[in-house]
Image (cartoon, rainbow, N blue to C red; front, side, top):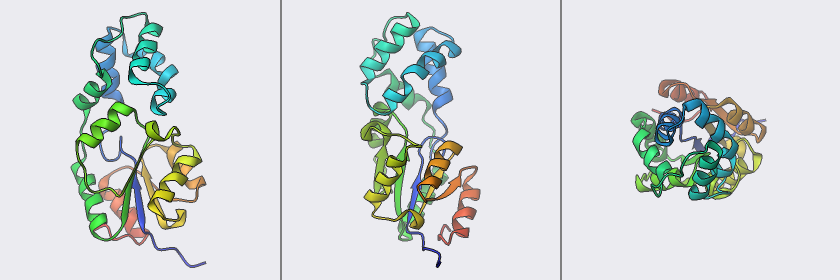
Length: 204
């Protein structure tokens, strides 16, 4: 069978386009709540999926988390948004790569498991190099569920074998592979460019 020409490149956000915000968020929120990082992580894990799928609001998330930890609920309207802004570290060379690919005629997308306040922070940055944005908190599904990959492809109007998905988490890469996508497990910018070139993508 003839190899399909790549027309779309899909990027994870946290860990690929920006430094993984999770460690910084854990430190920030644990300190703000006056608990250990271990206590925070254990409690957060009970509400993470609902928060990332948009099934609960940020206010409800903090109320449930504070109840679990037996501490007062934060008075700040969006402590998650504040924490996210504090730890946000973009990888400028990756954003430059996205712009380059788009200028070279490829369709580009973000596919991210994230929370509503983080999504709102993304929109505040006014990035203009993405054709499609898919956030788990808005769609009600998250990676590695097949539906969210299919949704992204549908919005790109691309077939799986014409698309590449880049993520730093193996489980999300596995979900993409099962959907038929070409995949790159992120390590470095130069490694991504090399892998894209091997797939016939003009990444320079």
